Image (cartoon, rainbow, N blue to C red; front, side, top):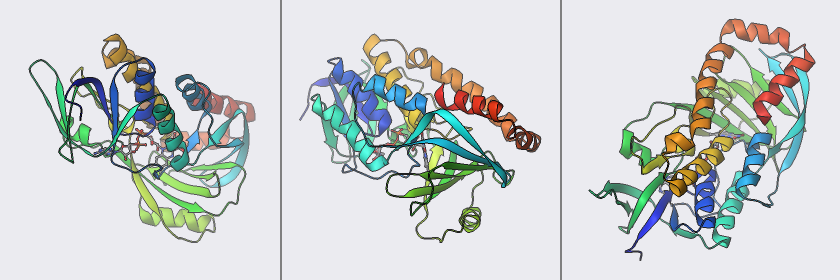
Length: 337
Ligand SMILES: Cc1cc2nc3c(=O)[nH]c(=O)nc-3n(C[C@H](O)[C@H](O)[C@H](O)COP(=O)(O)OP(=O)(O)OC[C@H]3O[C@@H](n4cnc5c(N)ncnc54)[C@H](O)[C@@H]3O)c2cc1C
């Protein structure tokens, strides 16, 4: 199969890969999407879509229909003290990643997109810049662009830059439905992180993400919430972006280290970098150029992360939570823009 050269091979059919592949396919560009998983597949994730994320999703996949739970109230507590309820004008949507990711893949397949179930092994670049991608089955694909959208433990990224040190760990457990508000706790106990409770579809999800998270800390969170430990899942969130150094090898979504360093939001960045990679391939511009908006965001987030998670800032935040209108403005800025 496929001795001819396609324009792009995209490894990974998560939100980043399907966004990129869908945009290319819709523009009539030949591409192949590769994933080793059998879809629908599960992904450890809170499944929270911020307003800016679902608006961008609807720009990329116009008219898309998917199942979600809408939540407009966030209960925020600093250092576990007197939680404050913040009502946001545009709700957060909670999705089940298994169904959601499959919906995106089906959108791509419905417009005639090619999909191969196989694992990426390695790639080589010829003198004329054509890339040969070798899959685990031994199958080879020839392309002008290789897009690495293969998630937090990306093999494409590993081949390009070797070992990666920008991961934070996030631990999560699914629990019976018990809440109709999103709850979050920021504390000096968690380095650059927080714990959350998301009311999801058919279950709630409690999670803890931080730069120094431990199983013991997560067990203490479960204890504080009166939740019995059942099955704890963990996954990396890569928060330091990586540049492949090659114009025709593009790393997007988690593979590119794009999730927000302060909030760990990753879905908006997966859609945005998927879209920006497609734009680079369609226009011949560099990804650095088409992805400028996200790189600017990442620079701002680095500064904000350093500021927010200082002990003195967390103390200050404790007082600011009493100021409803200010907190509402901060949340609207973070979630919608
Ligand atoms: C515990 C936790 C909670 C989170 N909660 C949220 C949240 O509430 N909101 C939010 O916005 N973000 C959240 N995130 C982040 C979010 O899950 C990710 O940023 C998002 O999934 C990134 O999408 P992606 O397409 O880049 O990667 P993925 O969704 O991981 O998709 C990568 C795909 O690549 C495939 N793949 C991997 N290796 C290979 C290979 N060698 N060959 C072929 N295929 C391969 C995988 O099967 C997978 O389908 C959370 C993350 C964690 C860990």
